[in-house]
Image (tube, rainbow, N blue to C red; front, side, top):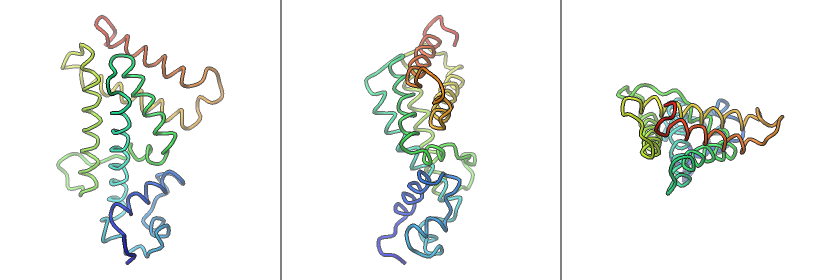
Length: 196
């Protein structure tokens, strides 16, 4: 076994590989080749390919939560929504494979998914908490909060995914202007008297 090989090294190598070749192309064998070890050596650090994928997902969600936290800190309303959109867009551009990993389908809470799944679920809850904090600046009825969180998450994820795929590169104005427009529209919708 290679000296210095840890679960963190294996997961970060997998995440780097995902950014280079795409999350779906990351395999234990590919990570082992990158680390110059035999594939069985990785099983001391990850339980298998599903565990590796879940751990990459958890890493990406935690990194993204840190970026989002910094982007919305001290901001409220439309400025916070724009910070959220910008943070996702920038992270997706810098780390396309990691960003794809954030969409990994995980088993439901309480199932036996292993440490990687538990870490990813915890990181996902952190994102929901960040959106709840953002919504404190609005008067969203408690019964609508989950719907609004899903709306924000869908818009942010959808826009960032399409933008990094180049879907908006063929026309003007630049996507940053559309992000500002979306932030203003969401802000207006969420304010008292808006459509939410």
